[in-house]
Every structure is written in structure tokens, then in C-alpha cells.
Length: 148
Image 1 (cartoon, rainbow, N blue to C red):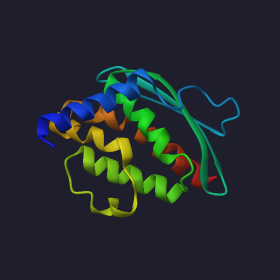
Image 2: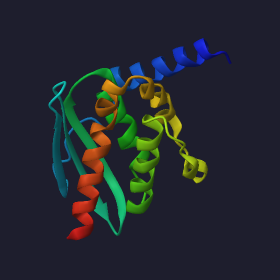
Image 3: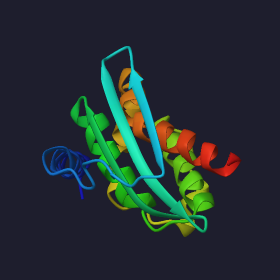
């Protein structure tokens, strides 16, 4: 597949998650709520999730922002639901490396799925914070959960 076709496919995946977000909403019975924002562009997110026996059993997000931040939140919620905390945090590290244009070798045993569509963001440093906002919220929430 040519580079132009791959870029077009990735744009379609990103726009699909933006227009049809997965796991959008608020968990009324969510055990954790994290609010974060990106002051440089105004993106904001509220992440609610439940962890039971070390497994992310449910996760939802609400927020406002650009297509990159909202589609990334949608992809992240899909990726971590059903994962144990360690896997979710590892996936976040891999995503962070990918989005910064670094090698992400530890990805071999994890299916990145739609998340790979965001790898082109690494070419636009100003958009990296947009793409990582939901992931940073997830990391913060899971680390707070571990401390309880």
C-alpha cells in the first residue's frame, strides 16, 4: 500500500473515531474520575473508569477538543477495556513512544489496532499533547488506583 493510501486510511480511522466515538459518556458508578485539560489548545477530558481485581472493567470519556484528542480518547478506551492495569500502563508507554516518533519494540505482544492510525501525529509536535491527553488521564487514574 502506498504511503498516500495509508495516510488516507489512517485519516479515515481517526475521523471515524471522532464522529462515532466509542465509550463516550460518564460511568455513573465509576470508581475513578479524572479531569484533565490541555491549556495550550483548550482540549479537555473527563475519564471515568472501574478497576476490579486489577482489571479495567469499564471506561468512558467525556470532553471537548480537536479530532486528534477525541479520537485518541475513543481509541484508548477501546484498547484498555478488559486489560489488567499493568497491560494498560504498558500500552500507554508504547503509545507515548509511538506518538513521539520513538521505537516501540515492546508492542510485539499487544495489538495496537486503530491506535496505529495516530502514529503520523509524531510529524506534528504541537499535536502530540492533543493525542496524549486521554492517555495521561488514564495513567494518572490507574496510578492513583494502585495507591489506594
